[in-house]
Image (tube, rainbow, N blue to C red):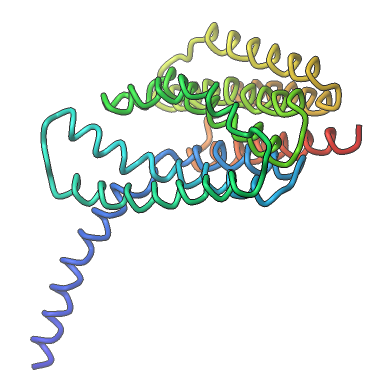
Length: 276
């Protein structure tokens, strides 16, 4: 009897494990760096102009990031004209998460009279580009990664507007974090290429850094209080170039470095906007 119980328990464990794995595969994002890039805009916006509406928007951005995974599964399987068990599971998960997302957006609308949705309209074409690549299972390419990250950076502007910040300051916050994405994503990709024995394209990195610094300078033109954030962005570029000259660390170390750089930039930008 004890042996039968043990075997039954083992059998249940074997059947339960694939289910957990299946749910995780359609519900949890595999882009580990995306957690930082998605949370940074909401945190920056709340530090500069805190509000309950802004908190709803920041949470909605995180839910949207998580919901992207099951939505992508449904879109990819739909494009390939197949209906699998994982497709149905992903659809159920997506419906729940999108319902939560809609509730948060409705809450934000109810809590503020400010037009926080304007940046979302401007960023929509970039999200459409990312979605197009997602549907074709090409989301790991540079263009969709940059498009999605720059679009997500608009959350900083949305949160700031919801909290009553000026349009110029909100746009400047967007530019600072967009600059961070434009510089950091190619830098991380180059580290991964080096780890695989490939030679990174130096011209791409130089162009990305140039665009990032130009965007940071544009943020200062829009609102002078963002000068510390712009200097922080310059520091990010310098540090990343220093990392590029050393040995390639483990992927986990690369991720930790980027999180430190990202949240450090958020802190400096918010500090400048608060004291200048």
